[in-house]
Image (cartoon, rainbow, N blue to C red; front, side):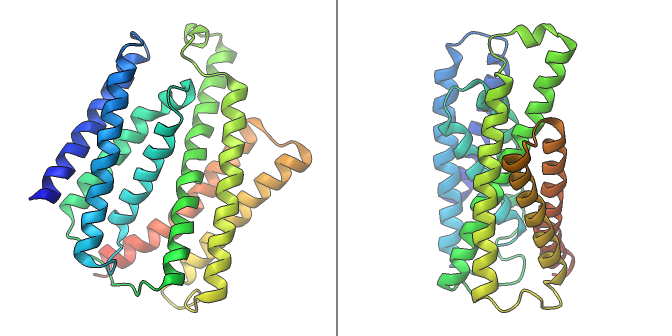
Length: 264
């Protein structure tokens, strides 16, 4: 009962916050404090839902939907921590909506769906690094799309481009590369821990996940290296990042969908 109540509170807070922020982009600044309060409620209850689920199953089942809920909580937290920065406010409705959808999915699917895992300390470290990397790289992809959007408005000389609520283009690009760099470093650490301490990377059920994850890592790493070495930036960097993100999503969520849903 507590689990269901917390889930509903979190979903309602996320959706309400997203609606208020969407209105705020063309409305008064006084709505920001109300949306911040809803953000805090949503984040606390979202975390409580995850904690209760892990307490009930003892970290044995971490399926596709639980993983998605953890990543969306991290996305929401990272976005909220930026406060009233225009770039974060512009993205927050989409991120909060995604978090609400992830909670709905987790509530509808039984917690014991999927194959159980052996949560050793090393595996927990690998999972933690991978989740943080995924959250940062996903957020980088969001900022990349925002970069394309703002750049398009500026080139079209749209009236929206003159709005004081529209984030500066250079600020978006700078934060985009910061997120991309940090996420790539964490992904490197997650893969290194996996290769050194885990022995099932090239097992039959893991091979395609390993290959796609390595391709995504090489893609992200190449973007970061070429950016700092040769000055890669703008639309080309964003397109490569979106492609690398697609590989990462296919590698992890695609394999988990097959394993947790189709083969269960």
